[in-house]
Image (tube, rainbow, N blue to C red; front, side, top):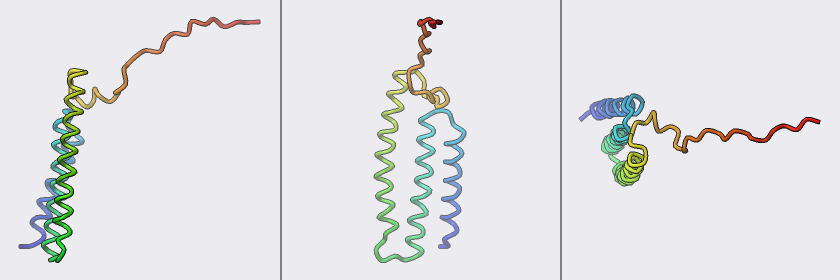
Length: 115
């Protein structure tokens, strides 16, 4: 099998994930798009490992490490999204940019003393 087939598929997956990260407003869909991008990288790692006929299979080992990191990332990311949804009632990324409580500054009650 040619290296071009998995490389083109990985490029399409990565572009789809990049579009999802940049265009979506829902935080869960953004996390799913990041997962698509990581899977595209994993596909490239395995494809190049097979193409280079590496005796140590470093690409496949790195893919397993990446899958473990992605699983931890999606677990923690989903927990954060659920807590934000419980507190704010929305998972819209545009509305969540300001994570601090929105308080207006207190008016300055001190009068200036003129001499």
